[in-house]
Length: 159
Image (spheres, helix red, strand yellow):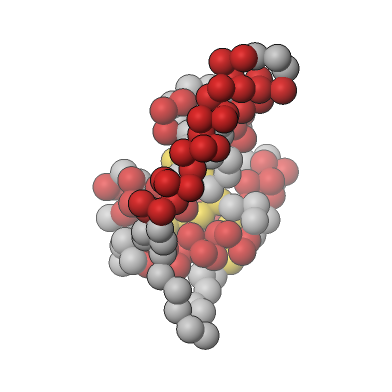
């Protein structure tokens, strides 16, 4: 499999100064708390929803604390853009430890876009009857939903 280069924070700063786009692949809750100032949020299933300016950039920098997931996202991006893609060595944590610009965005991404977080799930064990019903409904509908979607969007390739 092709791999994206991993660059250090000095190169990231240079790339950003030269007009590169940046994407944070962190969980939405972590992104809201603090993320590199220049980075927009995404997750792998939503890369096609990145702003046009990001997808049309010459270079895209990925912030991912999980390098393997970042490499997979880089492969996915290769299908969406001709940009040169690189991962930040050490991801967001290294960026923050280096004292580089971080910002919080308490309402970004909006709750409606946060498919990596189940809002009603946490209350189901605390006696919240509505949350328990919502969870049971989700559980009973899941097999049908999987059958409809199947492997939509994924391709299995022999090694």
